[in-house]
Amino acid sequence: MSRRHPKALAAGIVLSVGLPFLPLVLWSLSERWFFPGLWPQQWGLRAWQHVLDAAGGQVASGLLQSTLLAAVTAAVSLVIGVPAGRALGLYAFGGKTLAAVLVTLPLIVPPLSVAMGLHLWFIRLGLAETFAGVVLVHLTVCLPYTVFVMWGVFANYDPDFEDQARCLGASEWAVAWGVTLPLVWPGIVVAGLFSFLLSWSQYLSTLIIGGGRVLTLPILLFALMGSGDRPVAAAVSLVFVAPAFLVLLVSARYLGRRGLMGVR
Amino acid sequence: MGELRLESLALGYGAQPVVQDLTFSVADGEMMALLGPSGAGKTTILRAVAGFVRPRAGRILIDGRPVDHLPPERRAVVMVFQKALLFPFLDVAANIGFGLKMQGLDAGAIRRRVAAVMELTGLAGLGRRKVHEISGGQQQRAALARALVLQPAVLLLDEPLSSLDANLRQQMREFVQQIQAETRVTTLFVTHDQSEALMMSHRVSLLLDGRLRQTGTPRQLFYRPADPAVARFFGGENFFHGRIENGRLVTAFGSFRAPEAPGNGHRPLATIRPEDVRLDLENGDGAVTGEVTRTRFEGLATRVWLRCADTTVVALTPESRWTVGQRLAVVFPPERVRIFPEPPEKRRESLV
Figure 1 (tube, each protein chain N blue to C red):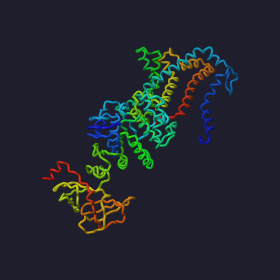
Figure 2: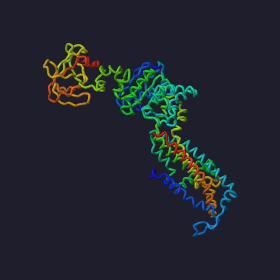
Figure 3: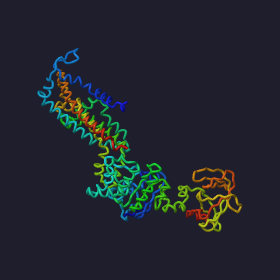
Figure 4: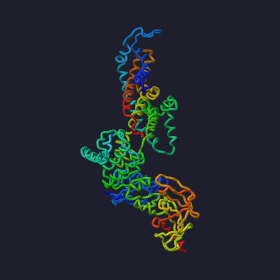
């Protein structure tokens, strides 16, 4: 069916993904919108003016903070998760099951208890209310996903490619950089993206560990929503979703074109 | 240029020994087949020569120099794997030029040498193709080209043809043989296929149960197996004990001339290949006789089982006229009877 009607399929996807955003767009453009009106009674740009002008500085710095935090978290997550996924995917070793359980544990334990438990430790270690502390608490969520994605990638990876490159004259470094990396690159992109978006949407852990000092976009968003101003909350939500949406779109195109190459 | 020598090599994984006391050489420009059943440790030997497996004991020498301490990239040994393993993120030409790039050659030199080797391997014009855009046979040739372009001291082939279908495999056998003859690159190639080993190589080393049983020309292994296991591997049947009396081998079912026979009193084991056994209508002239118990048509030949006294003799004959129940003369041409040398301790016993 999808082969015969590619356009219908695409329209269906766009509709199902895009439709839920419509109320947000409408709310952000409304001045007055009361029940039972299907449309706002009065249109206006007040919400957008507030977000881009009055609260513009706050939103911009939140945007920057969120981006920076998500990027650093994703990078650290990859630096740890890629070797871990390789070990789990390629080698047999004692305690492999235990390692897998320990990696999953932060996903099973409620995030609130993880964050609260860590908070005590972070205060002692001087990590509470710091950027590094928030990166660490975000890693408890991002790292399991990175490890699992890379585990899957390396489970289907043929390490003979590396031996082949070695005997063709490539040093260990040249192999890692010139063979392994390009082979697992699509997996790295996916895992990095996961981490980025997970960190991007963290609220509770950022609030507890950051203690209001690390002001990410979700923290701002909740503050604005709490004030009961729906049009403004809708506008901030759209600002919040836009970068993540952009990243997804770009990566989907990239992955669709390249596919997973290192896979047997 | 390269002579490969393995000296008393022992290999294993963990507590599991794979190969023991392996000693053989591949002469410069020679193509040697390392033959053995699956799981005999052939690939492990190649991986040790390439530098991916550390030997437990023994040495590996190339042109007389030990290479055990060298990492794989500095051994001048290139291995071609069972799978072509072309890098999917590079086009065909870049794959073939990979090793030269690692050596730091400039782009122009790489282009020239890649073009030359692509010409040699019949890949001319495919350089810009993506790896998945060429056929399986072309992929194997590209893998071979990628190794040959480096002019390695020793080329290792790990069953590179086993993933191809039968027709293509036959073409590739001839192709690999021809390329090896042209480039005279010292080649050690692993196969479990005896006919492939016999038809492609100058010499064959047969590996059984982790030990090298025999090294020699294809004819030597086939017609002059060192022991019964070697003979069995090459399809040998008809093993029988006998007693030597005046140049004749006396067995339970008759006696026949045996030119290779040692002195009187020996009790050697002898064999004759099924296709060397000749069958004839009974002539009653002191020949061994047997009754046909079973026949099986196998295309080019018919396999005939005969009962001679208490021994079963198997003959493989192009004739298909024999039927079950017939009594036939069974002729063992003397020059085809292989008498195995007795192990020393056994010989002493039989002499007493």
